[in-house]
Length: 611
Image (cartoon, rainbow, N blue to C red; front, side, top):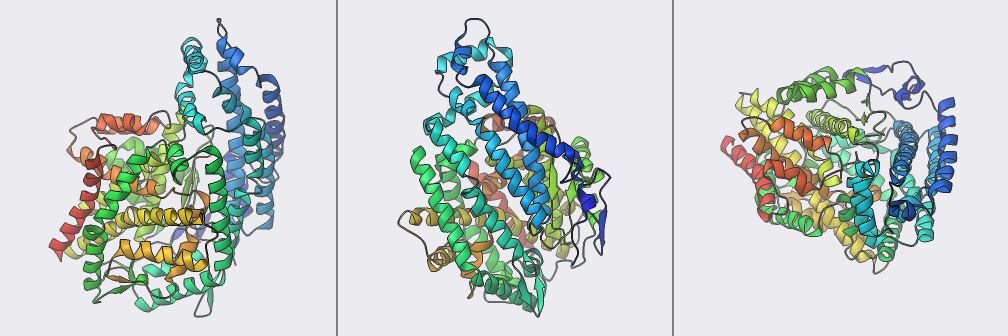
């Protein structure tokens, strides 16, 4: 069993894992810290703790007076000190999280992660007062301070955004209690989920596989391989169903308590606030997607069943490749070139930023025992740079995942210029660059394809990816709504959770897919339900937005790229309405979502014409 090499955390350049996929890169985290025992990590831990106490001592109880001074106050100085502390804490926490993601089964890494989480939670408790105290200052006083103190005024987007939280802000001591207990509450349950999921093994013909390789077999051309993988997943999920049910019940109740204390009305309102998107906009999106189920997923899966020679497909056939789909494994170097070429056709600047991730070992690609499943792009902090984690296995979808995560990476690099406090983009727009990167890669490949069968396979795969991003994610959102709504009436059983799951899946997938025994447990492995409740609608939001955005790009004579980069550079400084206005797009317009969904429908039309 291969484990992660310690060189990954050394100052020297990281190595590559040589496999039949080529040389897969392992990230080099030395731009954060040279190792888990690095003296600079200990130094920064001590510094963060001391500086946080000093900051609280210097500024607590003074902000209102500083804001009200006739002469220029010192709020700008306080903001800069606060941002520097947030950057330092973020750097430390990012390093611990990335080390842990590399192998969550390693006790040494788990201890480092846990210890740092505790220490930084304690340190940041001394910073809590700052945002709370700022929000207690009258609007008129804040507006005057923003106008008269240039340094404070630099942070105007962050200040105004912060004040949207004011109606849901609790008394200082309660906020501190919520914050400090998070490490033994939500944080602990999240960690339990991660470590449990990493430790799971799925038995297929005597071979014990981790989650990623098992899920990968659901894309195998052999139906028997897919069936065995699905049954192995169901068997292991069933054995651990009590643990996942307990985690889900606990976190749902934890959220309900927090929402009730803060005064949120709808179960998803706290997520909408964090995303800086109106509930009505999300409701319109979800409604539009649900209404589109018959003409999108239902229609497509009926076509696919016919292509596969089936009356109905089993749930394990949903992502089966078409007979026309090339089965060759895609080497890493080819995946790299494919994505960079597509990016370069859109903008050399975009390709150059993405290329840096390869050249400087900011990507961790191999599948390893203990490694976090899935994929992500972690922004770390603007003073460093993002890192990308993949589980690359040479499938076409893995190439699209690479394009997706590099889109995130490019976005994070560009938004980094806003600084630690204002670089972060709300989730509704955080998926824009990633989905756009996928679209660029897909269109580039499609334009180079003249073979009818190969074109059909590519179109089908893109439609499936879009259905997974839009239809499936809204179905996830509806599942979460059922779970959190019913949880208010008491604990949920595993059977209830399975029932909710089957209901939303049957509705979204349609009659062409038969949900066989065992599928009722598949809700257990979706990490977004645990880590970020109601996150999932951001994928559908991003995909529909990008569909509309790409249509603007195709019809634009010039200037689109610069407007696009301006949008990415903005980070979290602007509302979605302000960012989309230069493109003539408005997410509050009910017809907006129909445009995005129409792109998927048109691709299905094209597939029908090729049939």
